[in-house]
Length: 172
Image 1 (cartoon, rainbow, N blue to C red):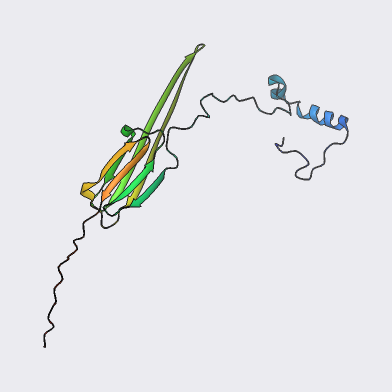
Image 2 (cartoon, rainbow, N blue to C red):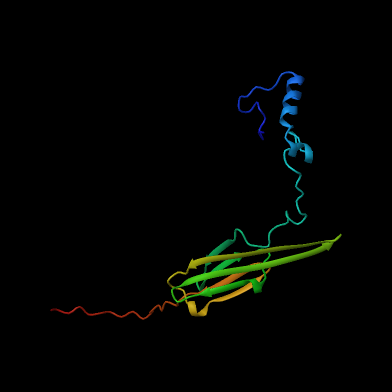
């Protein structure tokens, strides 16, 4: 049996209702179709989707990270909807690699009418960023507010020598 109508791929449709009825009867002679009541018009048993299946996943799929450079620091903002501070970890290594790790486990349990249903969702998200060369990796600070993780990476201070002196050019 095809899931597509016969006319899509160039097959002829039966022109008389008797031809269609005859095809329908010959296809349904298999005992499993008759025993379960599945006909050509209903090849599969109905599937009922659990009520919580279509709710948004608590796991971060596509995280949006913004980067802004100020005179004092590099500021990174990661939008992590549904994440708590306890679900997020920020790491920085000596090679100037910033790593944002999110782990979330959610378990929902429901009992009704003799049924016991448990839904378990878990996920893991890792984002790695190479920090600019003028970053002070030993002074990185991070905080989280309203599902937004803000990471402040201070810059190395470049000493600007404001004392200018003349250098004599001598004869060799």
